[in-house]
Length: 627
Ligand SMILES: Nc1ncnc2c1ncn2[C@@H]1O[C@H](COP(=O)(O)OP(=O)(O)OP(=O)(O)O)[C@@H](O)[C@H]1O
Ligand SMILES: [Mg+2]
Image (tube, rainbow, N blue to C red):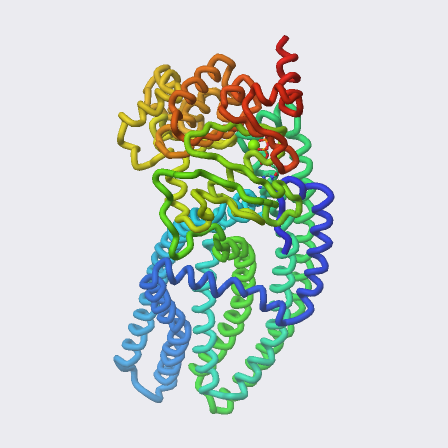
């Protein structure tokens, strides 16, 4: 199944996906083996279910075994009651307490059946809650262990989003699995009871069930294949629904007047699904009705046979009612089993993403004998012949790059959009590993260091830093979460980044909830958020400070102040900053110009201006627009 990319799918590629799915579907429905593949998601789900509460699962199963034996026991006791009444009416025996015992027994079985039924409902809901909790925690835990690379892959992201929804959305499946277990035991117990009376009857039963069996299974799998085929479209529908209700999209949807267009798209696609469903339902109605005629004929064949056996004195009236009830019941159970099975298969389909997500493994991990990060750093970072292409893409972003960042140095990295500046930062922080070449720290490959320990020595604020919809204090504390309660340190970091001025204006100061998601939240401007993010880097108190366009949203005066302070605060530290503003860049001790994945030139501002090449040209371009 091809995973849906969020936006690009809505138009032409939906049709393509449909064609692909159509072919898949033809191949799919061709063989029984393939049909059964529908259920391949069930065992892993059972495993997750088991892990979320073994004792509840066992209890549920025991209760289900009890309740599934209720129908056969009830029919058997009623048969005995009927026989006893018959004997009393025909004076072959006298009315005795035996009859009342039987009536009492039937009553007891009925009570047990109903109580156990309630208990099953109770344990089902307990299991559902445990399952939801377990899966949600597992999804969070697993996601936190994956590479950044996974998060930047739209397919993965889509999958994670759906895994999150699936964690709670498919609870019906748990009940269905339990029900199937119960139906199977009931069917077996009824069949065994019939078998005890006559093997011929069981043959007749099987014969009359075969048409229903074929019909139900055929349509169950057709419906599964249909759902399989519709999955990409349903994802597009989900995406459109989300888009229509999302805060991020609301501004553009309103200003560009896109709502009607989105609704039309949604309507067209949902009509398509509705029509397909209706077509299959109609076919199912006709076919299953015809087949059920055959089953009914089989049932009445058995009926006639049992009546004949009864009038010829082989079976008692009680046995007649017992057998007929059992046959009827067994055939109902079997047809219900198929609809349960098909509902399980349907639901399992939607768990594909969850299971695939759990299968993913991180690649950027610490080696078993990893080294601690150097303290203090002696010779700094070195990119040695580093080439890099993002995993799954062929475009070389960095090619044979050689670059050094030495202790005590403050370097500005510049270059046009898309030249690979942020990519360099990602390599330095081991969010990715180079495709070729090495990134060294103090002469040792970064891959030989313990990842977490390495990260502790680097404070980095990315271009697309997070705006946590939490309090101001928490927004800074995320830089080093151990300091969450250490307001003193947090205040000092805020002072360094000029965030203290922002916080001073907030009604609740450091305890002010930020963002608009929660009721008491206050939104900040882009520049104000940026000052808060900067405070995180200062809070880290790391040996290396990397700022990727940290001042893009700051006004000219604020930017000047931030950088003046940055320069004061990073004396003797290693600092790398990326900026498009030359007013900032010129403050650096060394400027590195990146072009086409290589270093085009480097030096101080004055040296580069004197050289009169790329840097001088870019500088002149920016400066001239201010004149
Ligand atoms: N996760 C990714 N997967 C694939 N390609 C990517 C990914 N991230 C970035 N790229 C590509 O790598 C190239 C370099 O990106 P990078 O973010 O390093 O540029 P940059 O120099 O920081 O640009 P800007 O000045 O716009 O921030 C870009 O052309 C971009 O398309
Ligand atoms: Mg960038």
